[in-house]
Image 1 (cartoon, one colour):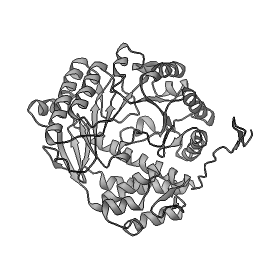
Image 2: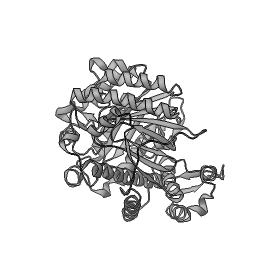
Image 3: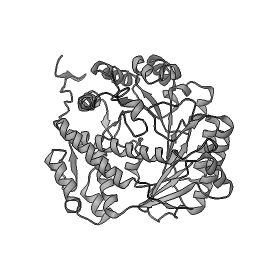
Image 4: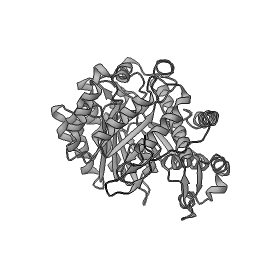
Length: 445
């Protein structure tokens, strides 16, 4: 196979060759270090909370809304969700809009809205009504991002979201029918080709379509991964996201050894993804790729230091404090009916904790900046996080930008580390969700 590509104008372009040199033992060590910090900082040693704090003048905020319903429940998914029942879902959307009104009364406005689930499009008419209500309450909202699965793309009501949703993220996971069958998605959502055709038909509805893929499944050979990437590229979406399969405490039995590939395969698979997508797309984060550099994407925590969540099971991060909404559907409805917000727990973090979290996000996003830490925390990044900076430099994960002393370049080794760190962070958040869901009784669902 030729190592060069001749472009239409006759120029010679060398294909991207990811330079991941970190040995597997070091990747394993990084995962263990991250697991230690995640277990330390994501403990449920929270205090009770009744209300969100008021906004701080001059800060930018993002609104997150959670829709906890799915028609089918995937075994590897750890998000907060319940089996769909129309009467409960319609009542929930009404409560969600009421909670947004309470947020408005506190004085908030938002630049961006992200709607996650669950499956956000279980009732397109209610979702459309909720987005319209949000835009009326918060006129500064410039973009709305939403998630869906392939099942809803050709439903009659899906077209109601045109003009309301700017970015639709579609959970494909894989176009390979064997992988879809192994993950119980073939019967639920159809073949890879059927999903491809549905996405092609839905592209005209939204300015940005994002195709979500997952790597790290058992049986996902180089050929299978390349086929997934090629199918996604043929769709020519504005964005492609390639998540690593995440194993948490609650999915360990159903995923590890049954669905998950050996951990040692991850670096090779990630190298293949970088080589295939870089050049076609700009890299937005360790696992997100877009046609331009300034597109919003799933990891909204990168673009917004502070966000407020509405709905059952949503999280907020405001003033260095994590707020958790009740995971009980019954309690959520009761709280909203009584004129209270859905929040019931809070946990404050130290300045050092928050700096380490922002360092993780900087590694993951490739936007590590000395200026950000100086402006936000009033510290010198090199000394305030000496241990983190030194270790990343020693393994070749970051290096100084010769054109700007305030910026750091995150190398391919750094992207690999950022991916692993974010994977472990999200796995830790999923473990928190599992703990919060564990006490739920049938009457809470």
